[in-house]
Length: 550
Image (cartoon, rainbow, N blue to C red; front, top):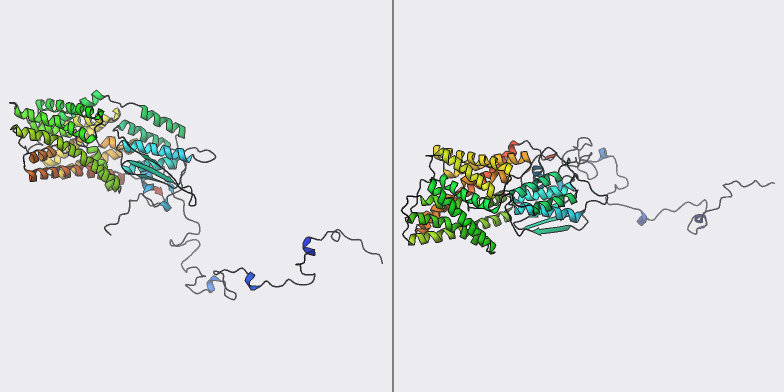
């Protein structure tokens, strides 16, 4: 018998498994695995039970709910098509978009869509955080509210592609935390604001930078942003020192005319205010705190009023002192403090209001020192109740406009906004005078309505120009400041009428709060009229949740 030749399969070498001692011989089946080797799960369906979902009774852990449908799933469960992506609308200004983002829960915030080009390795996290803190520092030092500062910082980080960033703003401290993922360590940076300078021109430049960074039409690299920040810091103020001193004097003179003064009162108030401003500059150059600067600035107007009272001239000394107080009342810090409190930043609001309290105490100390001296010299300082008269409405309206113009110069505003703010100040005074003197509306309510109108138009102008609302609001509320009520309260305290004096100071505080609340309410009303969608699919602009007393 001839053996058949081996085929290629027969000549194939056997594998190592064929010679393994653990391999069963040919023809013998593999034994069953022991019970402990079977992979099992406590969620697996036991053997013998039906796997058909329809056979499961309602309420079983292995059956879906009766109301569940893959196409139309109820909101209590994750939809079959997933959670829809929330995208920010591009029509709204960045202030409204970022403010709405900050008021959202962290889990509902959409993923940032970087509008600025990034390197292949990703954004430079330390540089982006440092740039964000520097921008926030300029805004906070310029008097911007805490919520607007956080919105600007949030806009910068999201524009450069950083997710999970949480900015925090207090009165003097800025901090920001970035967490790359839930398992990575967070990166935190902070910066302290040690010096504050009122320069609304620089504030407007910072707002333009934030707008360019958050806009898709313009490309702003980190180097370009740093260069523009350096230019803002190097630029001088738009108005020299002599212009500021002259504006302070004209402001006091216009305020004295606003409360019924004549030409002599105008000149006396202007000269005394300029002397107080130079004296405050001298104290600042010697390194004295701001409290003593206000004490020094409040003394010359009060001394001028006492001197005119002792002179044989028939002059309303109260109008001179009231005009000097108009230039010193910290209306800007008061509005910012109340706004921070209304928006939920209570620590910053408390610090700002405490600062306002210290400055007002400095004014009180300076004025009372001179008034006590005047009473010791038998000066005829008598309170005059008819401080707001409408005998010369045209002249008083022009005085209110001049007062707002001088305030705009003192706040270092841009020249293209000065005339608009001047007009708004005149409108605010006309509204107040029409309500308080013609319609017999209480002064507090009339002040709140006029301030609300200023806040309404100020917010609308800021949205139109993509700028801060402070340059359009702060100077326009100048004619509404409670200078006369403050003076009469101090005069009554100096005369020994403590109850009457405290009542007048309480009225001044009520007027100041009416101004601050009216400005904030006008801004909120403007956002109601503006058709702004904060985010698609996010339900619009949400407000911060409150405890409501429990």
